[in-house]
Image 1 (cartoon, rainbow, N blue to C red):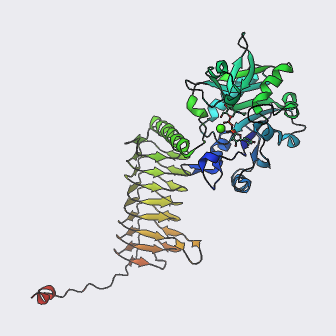
Image 2 (cartoon, rainbow, N blue to C red):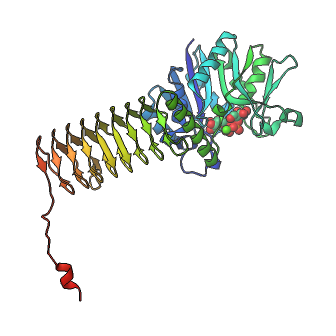
Image 3 (cartoon, helix red, strand yellow):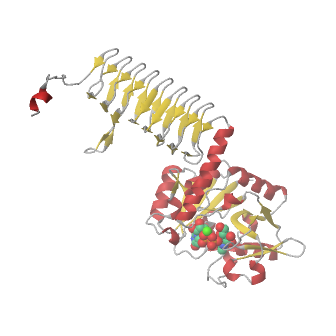
Length: 425
Ligand code: UD1
Ligand code: CA
């Protein structure tokens, strides 16, 4: 059966206190909404993102980054049920399952979503909600069951009786529904609740009263449904996400010397026997080869492709660059928009000047195999240094240089003997 997703992202996110939409706040250089969309990319054939607060920002991000996704404006925002109903007119003849997710829940994984859908299908459910058991269920909707354990309804915290508040099974906010059978619910939702909103959660009772098969799938990785409502939540989620990524890398043969001070984005691939030293920060999409040594205190900003046996040392920043095998960028350098050949050595303090602040243009630096750059060199891009070129320390390179040449812009050294002494009384 075809699956499409609806992702709720119209809410205000008041507690973020931000000019940026909540779902565009980032973890390791990727917006929260990006995590959710990436998780469904192998599951859903099309995604509908419901936008409202800061709609233009969110629409812009989705259109630039996710081709099979469409944003739908919800204005005003009258609740989660109202949000889903915005997609109805695009799904009139749709005859598959709809997966509903929230844009502020980035820690959910593809594996869990697949198990959830598998449960929905194999149990012949028409409407499945994901639940979890929380020691402290405060603020979540509670899953209310009948005496025979079948689902009855979901009650929001603000509408719950003391007995209902004591229930520890909570609504994770993720649903899988047989669209043709459940779509009728969205015109029947009412606002007779504590918040005066159209609650998506009311589709559970609706389904039951309509004689549908309604089920809950209880997941066991509670951290996956951690929702972001504040910047404190954002920091916490970033930590959880990072530890998860580091564990996966270590399991796959990467050494992480200090898991507390190392940050690596989940979109970074790293080969076996590579060692990541403390205080290294790697964000965005990167590919790092085998047997490399990165850090301490290195910063990879995304778009970095590194072959095997590379050294990127302390206080080195690399952005959008390709580095071939056996090359060293040992200390205090900036490598941006560059291509470095094999066996290149970059002396300490070398900078690729890739940005012209007047034209706002970025330009490329290309270094052939075996190029050796002396310390404290500025490579003013666009510039090409062919194979084997050597550059003397302290040079400013503004022209292309032919293979195996020596280039230096150093002014001659003057030595005035006894000059200091002559100045002393
Ligand atoms: C919701 C559930 C609750 C569940 C919790 C899980 C309802 C009524 N309650 O509560 O049972 O335990 O999620 O995290 O559904 N949104 C819109 N349009 C709106 C309102 C909200 O797009 O009009 C979006 C928000 O941007 C957010 C998501 O829907 O991404 C959830 O809304 P939120 O207000 O955070 O619901 P909760 O109170 O967390
Ligand atoms: Ca929420």
